[in-house]
Length: 149
Image 1 (cartoon, one colour):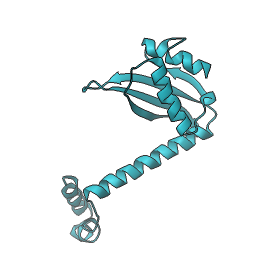
Image 2 (tube, helix red, strand yellow; image 1 turned 135 degrees about the vertical axis):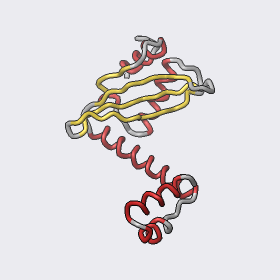
Image 3 (tube, helix red, strand yellow; image 1 turned 180 degrees about the vertical axis):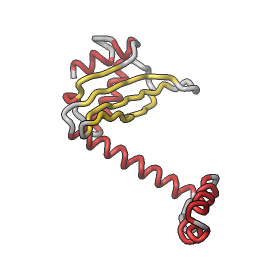
């Protein structure tokens, strides 16, 4: 592991060799431990964002559908909301779109996410998208489907 020697050197420079022997060498850093901790942190961050969005009176969404280097369509949704009088912006979801990228497919993906996490469309006060037809169409596009909800 590349990070561990760097951490040892930094701790030794700041606190001395004694600290490295007592604290750092006893820290478990196997691949599964690091992976599990990252997953636990991710779950905790998601839960915090869900709880904040459930408590606030309104939020707005910014959405974009893009294609990565392997030609996979990905939907990105960013939520903006006020948290203790401060505007926060967090990545709400990043999902691959396995079907076509129509307004209906995009809406169904977001709707499924909202249902799964018990989020309310009524609190959504604004939606920002690019100018694509699947996003901005007022009848069959994402914008039109959100307005009907």
